[in-house]
Amino acid sequence: MLADALPLLACPHCGGHLDEADGALLCGSGHSFDIARQGYVSLLAGASKITGDSAEMIAARAEFLDAGHFDGLRAAVADASVAAGVDAPAVLEVGAGTGHYLATVLDALPDAVGVGVDVSKPAARRLARSHPRAAAIVADVWTQLPVRDGSVSHALSIFAPRNAGELHRVLRSDGELVVLTPTDRHLRELVSHLSMVRVDENKTERLGAALAGHFDRIDRVAVEYPMALSHAEARHLVGMGPSARHLGPRALADALAELPEPVTVTASVTVSRYRPRYSSTAAS
Image (cartoon, rainbow, N blue to C red):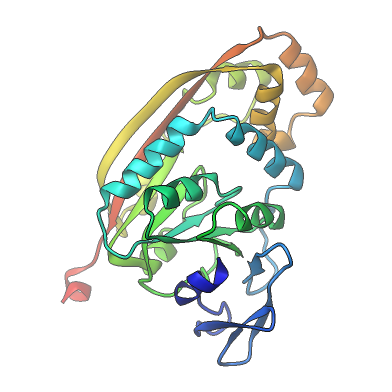
């Protein structure tokens, strides 16, 4: 709920504390942000250059995740979050989409409050009803997050972009960043047959380089298993990711018809935990 998350949120214009009144969030400087009837609030400071996931992509993701095929990935993210062992947990997920992963972590951390951030309004609508302790915020992760400095114990980036500087800013000193990234074997059966967007085989190394200077990795776990998917489930899987923008429905249907049913598809990811790094000057 938004009310529980207010201590974590900041005005995107002035950084001030936000309070709720008359169906809006207000800061002391007079900036106001209407709460949508679906329960989310947009804290965009201005127009975003990022194109968020469409309503069709979000619906496909919800259908696929509801079917449970990525439950092993969700469990691994929850396990990594619990391993942090911090008090008074507050969880932020960037690029949160439908909120499935955030909800799983909140279930594993019964005392935690959660904030899901996504630039997509269709995603925010799903996020707002994903969990009773989750607040749904529309914001651009590549600009300053509308989150207070040092306010969250867990930051989650699941198949999502990472703004290392901002994630470092909002994490508490005892907090952790949990990142799930696909390996080059992820969905390989569909990738090769459907000419889907491929994962860079050096993605893990590039992730480390992107976070260097802000975070130190403390753990990394590989998760890989086969999934038996119907053609409809495979269509949802393709439709929920970036390949949805490149494959037309007729071409996708024709290509799927050439595959066995069910089709075996590999889920293969790495779940990593990072702690924020501080310079000796900052630490003192």
